[in-house]
Length: 212
Image (cartoon, rainbow, N blue to C red; front, side):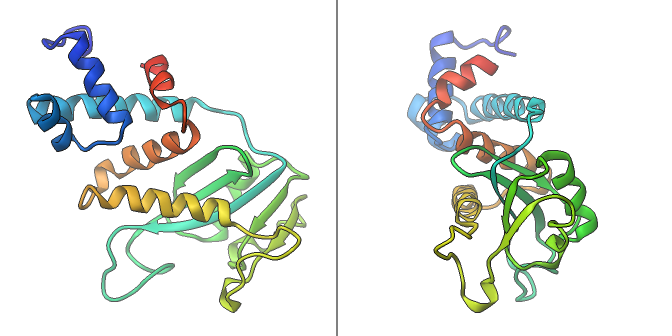
């Protein structure tokens, strides 16, 4: 697409810079005087490249790792959290390192445990909340510490918390709100973009040029 594009490489670079600055397609089109549909096509190209790159990463997690699930979408029927019709996402964050996300069918142990077994090295120190899907991780070979959100507990002096992954959820949801809703078919693209932006912060433009 880039090779066959009718706009100049200079304009392509400007579109990429606006993408890296996290401007919307409408903002970019107005700023550059470019057709919005053209900008949308480029933005989609960038996101597809990001997804391919994120999916190509096959190194797992070890050391101190935080695990959590979150739910994306608008509140419906007055319900929140587990058991809603929102999109459930499982996340793994290495402290002082990268984050990984995966859409799941539900937050059950059957869904979550295989992901942990595949991506988190045994003997790692894992931090979770009290959700029952995380029961038995000690028996699986992990050092497991838990925080009890039901008792308004969010951290303790031993460093038991999941503030890192919760901060990522807050960032991702805050970022997605500016689009005034993301369709279900495009949600995965935007989720992986949030993951990429978090992992490559401070190096976003250079990394995106590299993977393109």
